[in-house]
Length: 89
Image (cartoon, rainbow, N blue to C red; front, side, top):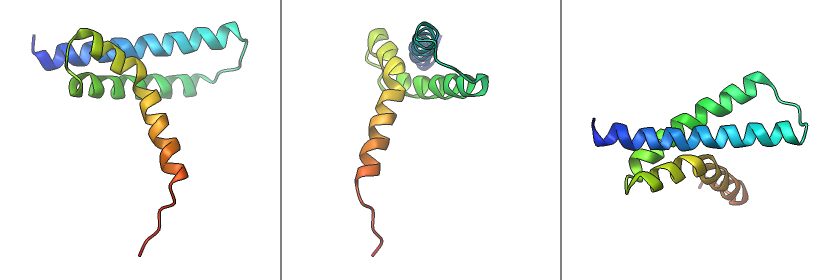
């Protein structure tokens, strides 16, 4: 197997674990979920997890953690980008 496929697999596995943990948290706290929202979240987490697993290919643990925390990284970047005023000259 190619090392890229292995790295992407660990990223995807981490992303799937993140989706499962968030699903369980919603179930425990009795929050309402929409099926389309969960599917979109899952697919985007898998894509981002695979990408980050390939980019951060320093071992299986880093690949898994990058997939798990991939959406948190993007969420943090989005919050920072919203705070910065972007002006055109």
